[in-house]
Image (cartoon, rainbow, N blue to C red; front, side):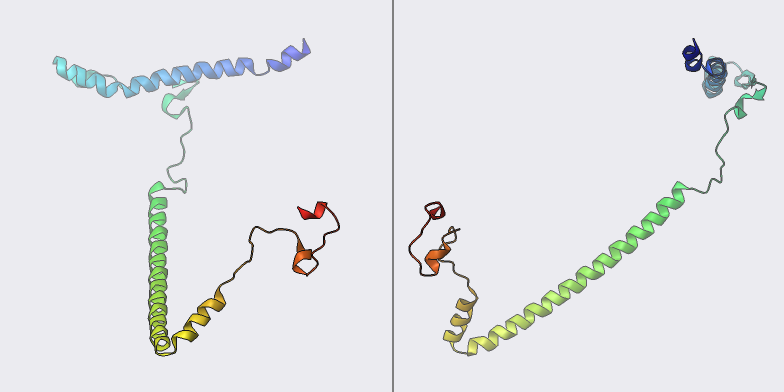
Length: 165
């Protein structure tokens, strides 16, 4: 029975609060329907000003102030946030464009220098240019060869059968 009491702790308070919430929601719905009621009365031909504003209290307080409203000056503004993000994004794009332009300039200078060097080298002997290109190439006798280092060292005999593979 002790366990049952712990599980139901605060049950009456929750029920009471839910009753107050239901009352507040019904008043809020009536408040939102006020404009619609006025339009209907106007269409029917009656005086729209006869619609009464919603009044009442929930738990001794006015229904409008039953739930606390956030402060209007809470310190955060979506408009200000969006404005700041826009300026940051604009600055970022501006700096990226500047960097890209600088990189393009550097590449253009590099290409110009390479063309100049190529023009210089073309006047040189064609044999020297071919040997320079051949010296940069790396040629492997068998790229799929993994083991069998003894054969490279001049030792053609392999003692272990396992080392063949």
